[in-house]
Length: 283
Image 1 (cartoon, one colour):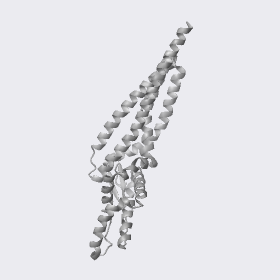
Image 2 (cartoon, rainbow, N blue to C red):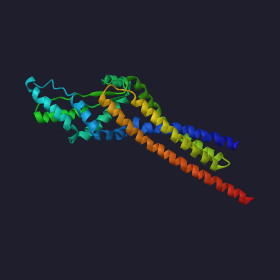
Image 3 (cartoon, helix red, strand yellow):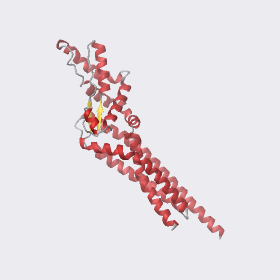
Image 4 (cartoon, one colour):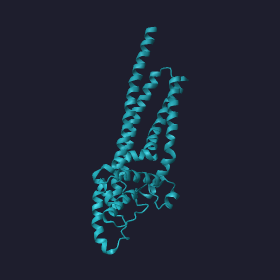
């Protein structure tokens, strides 16, 4: 009976861990604002992405308040602002604020997001802080008043994907509960086991199997996400860069799980050999 309980608890612990680890990663790096900003912030340092994002942001600046006879002066300044935007002292702060606004829009309640002018997309970039930075630079240079908009939205993903964002926000935090359940199951397995080395060995093999499963899931999920065209070059570039950053970050979790699984396998084998020697010596 003890062996049966230990086996069931070990299998349960592995199954719970299979869901808990990805869920915790998603909650920390996608659902939580600070994690999302940390993960996406380096994208603002990519030269090609910077140029396209700056051009897209500056291209939305409304110059309707500028007198017609001065339009010839403003147009060259728009091009210059697009080229120099990323070099302005306020660019890092504007990029971070862009990410924070975008996260709040993407994970906001659908009704609230619609009232704010955002479409029901899986991710909506609000580049208004970058537009404001460009407008400020143009106003400073030309002495012309340019009022930046409160929102400048670029949709990333398809409207049908909004449901996935809502599911992530709802279910990802449950990963912590599942992780506790997994730990309790493994503890029960160790307490009930006649040979604890067997439990450690099984847990280690399970960890190695999960690492391989997560790696396969990461590749398939990334490929599927990249196959979805947003219809916007800047949005596509953000998607590709973000997926690469997310994949690299989760890969460290997969590697850690694989290493931990290998250690448990080694400890389990050593424990089994040690227990057999003790049994042989007692005889």
